[in-house]
Image 1 (cartoon, chains in turn red, purple):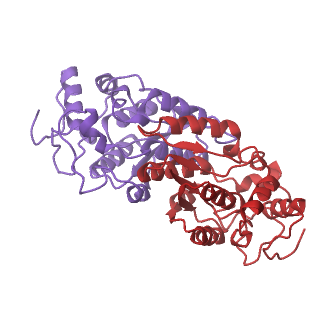
Image 2: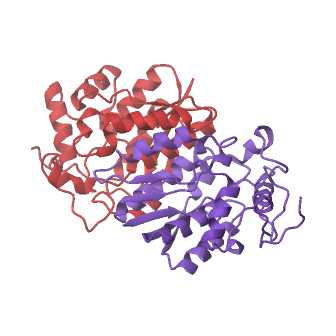
Amino acid sequence: MRSVVIISGGMDSTTLLYDVVASGQQVFGLTFDYRQRHRREIECARASCQKLGVPHRVVDLGLLGDLVSSALTRENIPVPEGDYTDDTMKVTVVPNRNMVMLSIAGAYAIEMGAEKLYYGAHSGDHTIYPDCRPAFVAAMKEAFSLCDWHPVSLEVPYLHDTKAGILRRGLLLGVDYSLTWTCYKGSPLSCGKCGSCVERLLAFREMGVRDPLEYERFT
Amino acid sequence: MRSVVIISGGMDSTTLLYDVVASGQQVFGLTFDYRQRHRREIECARASCQKLGVPHRVVDLGLLGDLVSSALTRENIPVPEGDYTDDTMKVTVVPNRNMVMLSIAGAYAIEMGAEKLYYGAHSGDHTIYPDCRPAFVAAMKEAFSLCDWHPVSLEVPYLHDTKAGILRRGLLLGVDYSLTWTCYKGSPLSCGKCGSCVERLLAFREMGVRDPLEYERFT
């Protein structure tokens, strides 16, 4: 069975890549370059695919960065620090990002004759990202079942898992988390302060494991 | 009320543009350049928007042409002639094209603060294009209602209309059909033989009106 895995280079999608490869499927990795500040995650996605022998393709989504504004794509909008809370982190929402990525990945999956398309949305994302909610995922699953004469099954296996739960799974699978990137800022070291870093560090703390990444400071 | 109208430059979406403008909404036109052979439709979309005083943006979707193959985007796949029938016209399907276009248009609509996103799928499309079917449109409407905290309403007013029915509406609205393009081939004149031309000519014949375009030959 052929499958396409959307891999951002973050912890969740990298764990998912290992998971699908471990299941014995023929995997194609797909990463989106939407001019995110945290471009290092793209290099991480490439490195993980290379490590697992998975063909990897990067899709240039610069057009999305041109059309919409977000703290993740515009230098003049600062990335907020602290926890993921509604008020501050919403500037990191890239409008309709997931639908855009899923639709293009779906085109690629159809072209490659893949039966499944995997993406790594999880329960921790729901509070601020509307397009990570289970109801949105359900609607997209339905759309994918109808979008082609050979429809693609949209698979979101971590949808109801927590970040720590996904990390637990990844540790079992032997995921190399030094080849993942989470910080939303573009600095050489992870900041340890943005909502994304805080969430990652909490997951590692919960699992009692040291994060292999270096941080400017630990929160 | 602000609205985004996806306009390809063909008959249906151009009629839709006139329709939404006539309803008094503040309209933004959006066209996709996916390296289609029939690039003249993009110029037509621009001309119709200009004529109606509608701001118009062309999104470069070259990435889709790179990722997938179709007779509409690859020189080495010939465009079939004759009626739209399952066997021959399926090579003109661009995998997941509508989901890709809708998702990007949705991002633009959210960015522009638009409440509605219009697109011109109609009943004549269903037989060969899976992503024009009402069930697909229903799933996408649901996804759009959930994709953002300020969701966009996906409007597909011609979904159950025929091509001739849309033409009837357009003639009432005073649509300038000399500024529309339908032929799938890239020639200076419409071929009059591809499924797309045949369908257009039949609609004009049904309405008893002469098509203002010039053809290489009438079928």
